[in-house]
Amino acid sequence: MEAADRVLVARDVHVSLNGTPILHGVGIDVSPGEVVALMGGNGSGKSTLVRALVGAIPLAGGSVALFGAPATGSARSRVGYVPQRMSVGGGIAATVDEVVRSGLLGHHRLRAPRDARSRAAQALAQLDIQDLIGRDVSRLSGGQQQRVLIARALVRRPDILLLDEPMAGVDLQSQVAFAHALSHLKEDGVAIIIVLHELGALTRHIDRSVVLEGGRVTHEGAPPQDLGIHALPGHDHEHAHADPQPPTSGGVALDGPA
Amino acid sequence: MTLLTDPLVQRMLLVGLLVGVAAPIVGTYLVQRRMALLGDGIGHVALAGVAAGWLAGSAAGLAQRDALAVPGAVLFAIAGAVIIERMRAKGAAADVVMAILFYGGIASGVLLIGVAGGSNASLLGYLFGSISTVTWTDVWVTVVLAILIVGIGLGLRGALFAVTHDQEFARSTGLPVQALNMIVAVLAAVTITVAMRVVGVLLVSALMILPVAIAQRLTTSFSRTMHAAMAIGASLTLAGIWVTLTQNLQPGALIVVLGVGVYIVVTVVLAARQGVRRGANS
Image 1 (cartoon, rainbow over the protein chains, first blue to last red):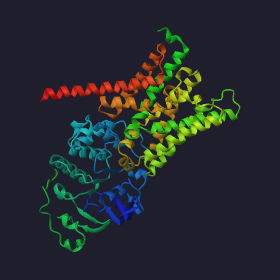
Image 2: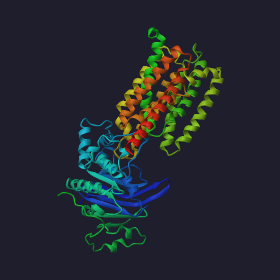
Image 3: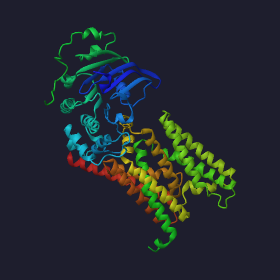
Image 4: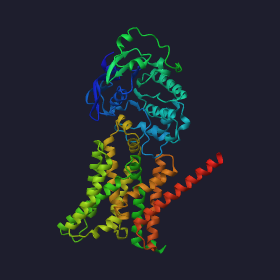
C-alpha cells in the first residue's frame, strides 16, 4: 500500500518531555481497517508516542502525516483519541452527556452541532452505556469511565482511533463491550492504534504489533504472545517471531459479533 | 419599596445584578482549571492600573483625576492575565507567577498613587468597593462589559468546558487550546475590573468563586453548576446591596460574608442529610 493510502504515517519521531528524550526516531503507520497493537514495558514510550501522534504534545523531530498530508487542525477532526484515564478537571461535576458531547468539537468547530445529543446517545449505545447519559462521570466505576472516554472519541465518527491502554483496570463487562465495538469499527474501515500491556480480550482483532523499548521500535509484525519477554532488555524480537504461531493464550478471547 | 424609585438605588441594584450574574460564569471556568486564586492575582495588578490611570489623569491635568482609573485597571488586568497565561503555558508554576503579580501589583499601586499626588486613602474605594458612588456612565460600561462576559462565557461554553475539563484531549481534536485559555484569562481580567466597583479588589475573587463553590454542592452537571452559580451570584449581590440600603454596613464585605454563610449552611445541611440517609440504610 502506498504511503498516501495509509491513514497515519509517522517517521523518525523524536519527543522530549521536560528536557528528557523519550522517543528516539520512532516510525509507525496504519492502514484503513487495520488494528495495530502498540506494546512494550512500562516507560518504553508507548503513551508518549500516542500523545505525540494525536498532537497532544509537540514533536522534537520527525513528522506525522494523516490521510496523506501533514497533520493539521482539519485532519485532526477525523481522529479519535482515548487517553489512559479520565481527567477529573477541577472538581466541578460533569455529566456523561457533557463529556461525550465535548468530543464533537474541534478545529473551526467551537460549538456542538444541533444533533449533538442524539449522536452522544448513539456513541454511548455502541458501548452499551446509554443508561449512564445523565450521570456524574466522577462517580462512575473505572470501567464505565473508560467506556465514556471511548464514546467521546467515537462520537467524532473518526477514521482513525488511538487508544492508550483502554483495558487497564477495566472489568470484564467493559472489555466485552469494547471488543464488540472494536470489531464493528474494524469492519467499517476505521484504522486503530491501541496501546496494550497484554492482548487479552482483543487477541483476535489485532492485525499487527509494534513493540517499543527505551523509546525505540524493537519489533514490528505478528503480535507477541507474551509481552513479559518483550519487555526484557536484549530480547531478540526479530527471531522470536520469525515463524509466529497463532495466539493460544493471553486471556479470554472475546470475539465481537460478525 | 420607595427606595426603588431612587436613581442611585436603581444604579446600585442594576450594577450588582449584572456583576452577580457575570462573575460566576468566569468563576466556573477558573474553578474547573484549579485557578480559583487567579482573580486575586489579577485584582492586585488591576490596582496598579487604577493608580497608573490616576497618574495619567493627573499628568494630563484632567479635572477628575481618577477619570482614567478604570481604563487603567482594564489594561493592567488584561496584561496581567496574558502574562499569567503565557507563563503557565510555558510550564511555570502558576501559583508562583500569581504570587509575584499579587505582591508586585499592590506595591506598585501604592507607589504610583503616591507619585500621582494621591494618598493610600484614594485607593480605598477600589480596595473595598464603592458601589454607592456609581454613575450612569459606570452603569453603561458595566452593561457593555457584562454582555461581553455573558455572551462569550455562555456562547463558547462547550469549547471552554472541553479545554478546562481535559486539555490534552481538546488539543487532539484540533481545538485552539491556547487561544481558549487566553480567552478565559482575559474574561477574568474584564470581570475583575467590572466587579471592582461592587466588592473591591480585595474581595473581587470571592464574587467569582463563592457562588460556584455553593452551586458545586448542589448540582451534578457542569452547565447546571454554571446556571445555579449565576442565580446564586445575583441573589447574593442583590441581597447584600438591599440590606446596606437600610443598615450602615459595607456592601462588598456583606455580600462576601453572606456567600460564606450560605456555603457553610449548604455544606452542613447536605452533610446532615447524608448522615440521616446512612443511618436509615444501616
